[in-house]
Length: 135
Image (cartoon, rainbow, N blue to C red; front, side):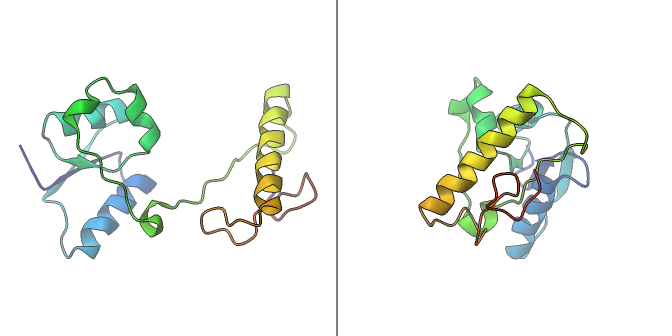
C-alpha cells in the first residue's frame, strides 16, 4: 500500500491537476501517480489502499464498495470548476435542444433569485436573451 500515491487519469486531466495542486499547497507531492483509465478503476484502487483520488462526487453512487471509502469534501475554492458544453454550430437535435433549454432555464432561475452560481458573477445565456455564454 502506498499512502502517498495519487490515483488519476493521464496528464491533462483537470482532476489530476487539481489533486497535484492540492498536494502542492500542502508542501509536498505524491510519491507516485498511478494512472488508471476509468473512475470505477480509480475507486477500486482507493478501496484497495493504492492511494487517494480526486473525483466527481456523482461517481460514488455507482460504486458498490462505497462503505470502504472515506470521502472528504473540498473547500468551495478547491471544488469549483468551469465546465462548458461544446458542440458543432450546425449540430441540432431534439435532445440537444432539450439540454439547451434546461441550461437556459437554470440560468434564468439563478438570475431571478439573484444568486451567484459557484464563482460566476452573472450567469446568463445568449439563446434565452440573458447571457454571455454561447450554447
